[in-house]
Image (tube, rainbow, N blue to C red; front, side, top):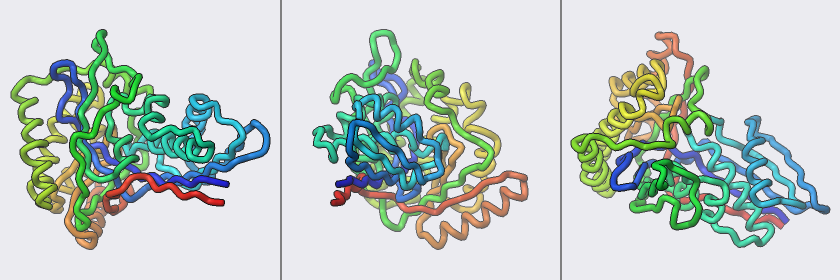
Length: 328
């Protein structure tokens, strides 16, 4: 018997709250149809375990963390596809949740997605990856209470995880252009701690602007399917959030190349732009797959003329959570 889990990438669209009244990192993001994680976990004879990685992506740390956290024995783990690491698309969370959730289903351990997240220290800075795995769509989370020391620590209970305070399907006509630079990588799990462990408050006027962008513009506009209002608010929020993190990443975006791609996408008519997490993936929001494809080709031509090596994907949102298939 085997259990196969399919999980999608996510883009992290930033934070609407950094630190207010002891609550840190209220975030927002969206699940994507691709790239994706596909893993199969099967029973084996004996108490050992076996790993076959067919993805071409090094996910040994993900497997090690799951095996250690759940003391897995007597299982075979087959990785059929994986999200590239450290490019801002949630590879670690989606892979570890997929393996652990498949193992729980196979072995009858009874762990839900959020139980697994707590045991694996997922949802430490943001709940977007966990909620994307559960439900997909466009997500706004609650943020987390900081510790008495003023630091963000691993969740210790289900209640300690960021909660979904808003979730809605993303209109089917909306497409995302993902641009991924070939020679850049974002912070890894260790590198991001310097930026995230101790959140700081924003000036009240900037904090108020972020609240307005999310709760007066982005949430109502996605319910109305108004891509223009949503895209403008998203772009503004991304620039405000980028300014907060500029002292860690050297600018509003992770690098000059990301900034150049973002500006080029805006010039060619995308409705909204952003950098997912620490990058280097940047994205543009467009209505219509064919239009998105044409814009992406024009942007690629322009950025290549500037010596920027990048590749792109045009993807839809994923409005459902991870899929689980039982095989006998």
